[in-house]
Length: 168
Image 1 (tube, rainbow, N blue to C red):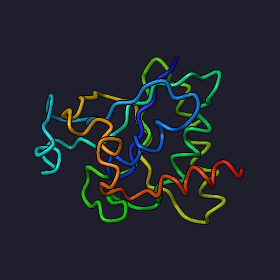
Image 2 (image 1 turned 90 degrees about the vertical axis):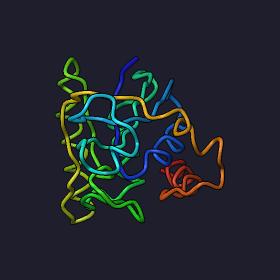
Image 3 (image 1 turned 135 degrees about the vertical axis):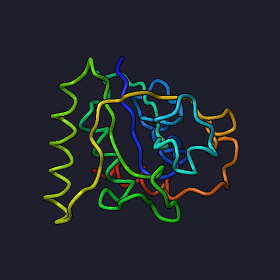
C-alpha cells in the first residue's frame, strides 16, 4: 500500500476518475502544501494559504504502478496549464504530483513520466513535482462529491477518459 497526492484543477473530478481505477484502495480530497494549518475551502480559494486542491490516493502498488497513475493524471488534465484547468482558475487549481519523503524515489518516476508527456505532446509541462509538506482533509461535502452529485460540475469527462484508457 502506497500513497501519492495528485492535483489538476478541481479535486472533485480527479477523485471521481481515480476512484474508478483498479488498484485504488482509498481516496480523500483536501488541501496540500498549505502555509496555514487546516485551511478552509474559502481560505484556499482566496489564495492566502498557498494550498492546492489535491487528491490523496492510496493504492496497491502490486496492481497499479506510479507510472500508470501519473500517465492517467496527465491524460485527464492539461499539464501545460498554469494555475487553471478549464473553468477552474486560481493557484489552488495548479497541477502537481506530491510524493511522501519516505518514497523519495517516486520523484524520478514522476519526472520521467512528465518528460515522456512533453516529448509526445511537444509542449512544456508546468506540473509541480514536490515532496508533500502537509495535507488537510477538505470539508466533508467535498468528499466523493461527484458520487453524491452526479450532475455536478467537472472539468473532466470521466466516462470518456476511462474508455480512452481501456483502449490502450
